Every structure is written in structure tokens, then in C-alpha cells.
Length: 294
Image (tube, rainbow, N blue to C red; front, side, top):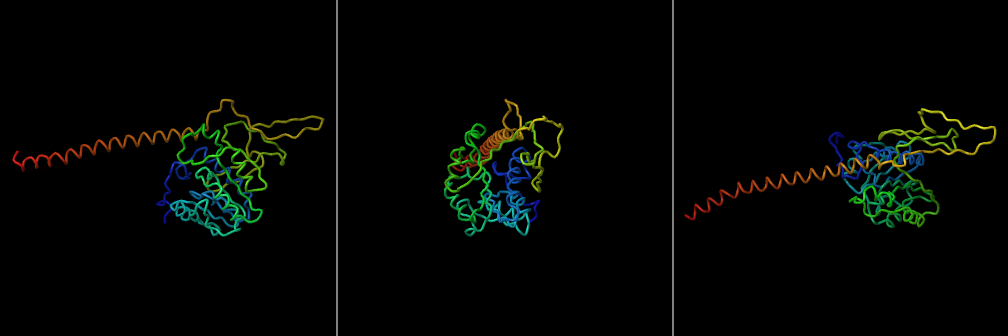
């Protein structure tokens, strides 16, 4: 199937690389960039692989990658677009994965948990599929802040706050680390020391790369003394009144425009249906009247 003809529909929630290019893409790519570093030479499962770009990025460094998605159209699209000998896409759900026991080293699941309520069933499947000491890398929106941004997201069935998410992880895994993510328009200060340095990821849906510290910067800042200095951590500084993420605002505006357009189309359709009905039924009424002689 020709990729130019094989288009994956945008549901309003699924990220489709050919249609969307905004800050949300950076959040998704950032997660996959971090996951790549933990997947080198290993067998990987990408749950809710969607369009397939993330699985493809992982397959560039992993031994093997299986992308699983509940939508058959997404599976067909991904198998057509991304062709690697170590990459396959299969249809399946988070609570019923088409993989044998203890067959995977790393499971990646980004923005999946909130789309269904079978959380325990999903984690039982994750534990079944993972090899001993296997790794889970999972993201889920923070309910308390996401609700402020998008309180009526029709695609989210069961969002979790940090305490709920942590409780779920602790129920099935003995060790874990929490990371927190948000898009920022901010000033960034990195540190020369590699141990405490910020890692910068750059790239697109085809490839990503990492750099210890910023690859390009505009100011050099020195902290110096004849006395021993304390460790310095990388940092960001953002405006106190920083607005909501631009991509989120744009998405909400797009949803409003789409709804308004649908209402306009429906109104035109209803109006034309009424007019056509009048044109069709008027002659029938005339013929009925004429045939009766009245």
C-alpha cells in the first residue's frame, strides 16, 4: 500500500505526525527519547503504539520492538509506513496483549492508562509479559492539573492524580522513580559537570539524538571561589504568570471551530432536506388532488 494513499484518521486524541506539529509533539518525542536510552539491545513492547512513530524510533536501537494498538486501522497503517526487520505491529488491548509470558525486557506505555478503566487488568498483563527485572516506562496525565486545562476530554475515561498513580505502581512493582513533565517557555541553565548536567534531546518523528548540556547556548555563566563550591543543579526559570501550553490552547480552539463547522453543516443539511422534501411532496399532493377530481 502506498504511504501517500494510506492516511491514518485523526481522532482528536491520537497524535498523527502528518497532521500535527505543535508543542505536544515535543512532549511525546521527549518521552521516547528517554525510553530509547533504556531500550538499547533489548526486546521492547510499545502499548497503544498509535501511528507507530515511537515504536519506529525505539526500533532504531532495540533488538526488537512490538507495537500493540487496539485500532486495526492504526496497526495496518504502522505496518505499511514503518518497515524494519526488528519491528512489527499487532492488534490488541492493554488488558489482552498478543505476546507470550516473560517475552519482553522493556514496556513503554505513554498516555494510555487514562483511556480505560481496566488498570489492574493492564498491570497484570504487563507483569505477565515482562521478564524478571524487566522495565516499565509509563506516562499518564496528572489529574489535578490536567482537569484545569481540559476538563471535558471525551477520550479520557479514568485519569489519576499522583497519589493514585503511585499507589498503582507500588501495588505491582518493588522499585520505581517518578519523573514530572510539562512544556515550558523558559530560561534554561545547564551545568558543565556531566553527573549533574541536563540532557538535551533534539530531533523529529524520524530520529532523535541527545547531548549532555545544551548543544547551542548564548551565555556563559561562572560561579567561582577559592573555597570549595557546593554542587550546582541544572535549572529552568519561567514566568510566574506563564499561560497554558500554546498547543493546548490551539487544540481547544480547533475543537471549538470543528464543532461550530459541524453545526453549520448540519444546519445547511437540514435546510436543504426540508426544501427537497417540499419539492418532492408538492407534485404528489397536486396529483392526488387531481386524480380525485377535487
